[in-house]
Image 1 (cartoon, one colour):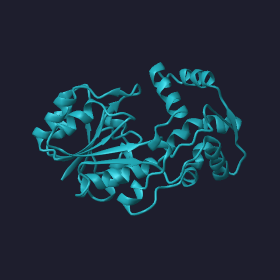
Image 2 (image 1 turned 45 degrees about the vertical axis):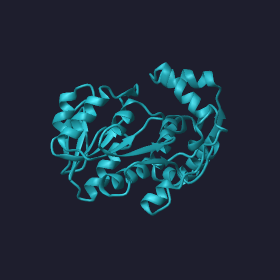
Image 3 (image 1 turned 90 degrees about the vertical axis):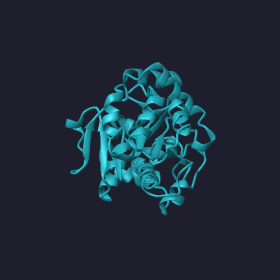
Length: 272
């Protein structure tokens, strides 16, 4: 059973590829830049792009399970030609698919649910790895500036998302499921900052930032206005599932979801 992972060099996809390769599963990785993919030896790395349906059709050959992104690129654009993409997957013999959403259900999910594929929706809230966006501030100033820091979220480690995805792609019993994926705790930004400070053994301050300050900071990073609006709204008014602890990771994998403190210790070097 060859498994195709789209977005194979992204935050989640890279870990799915590693999980499957470590389990000796035949895995094919789709990326726009195979030469710089840096994936495990033995992985079948293919060039492809969601805007080029022919490249996807070629990648689907011999594939029976698929991890599918629903958005792509730095602007988080919705994957185009959803119905054609899904039809091509079915025609090639794909039977099972996991879908990684981006905070909303859209045309990709609709096309998959209307097909004969066995689907599993992966619905994570905030990623713990988003905290890596604070790394430069912490390294150079010993401070984190963030808006709406008092609002609690239940962020999830991308490695836990990948583990759930790998199991859903290789085991029975996950078809037709909507998996809300969170960490094991609701945690605020000041509490995340404290966990990072403990992990690196140095003081790190939290400074509350107004929405306009956050907007200007994200603009300076090249983030588009619609994405900034989405991030600020998510931080101020997270959906209920993103601020409620779900036990799905533990139920599916058999072990508790990783804590933010554990994630911070594993990524301490990024903040030093």
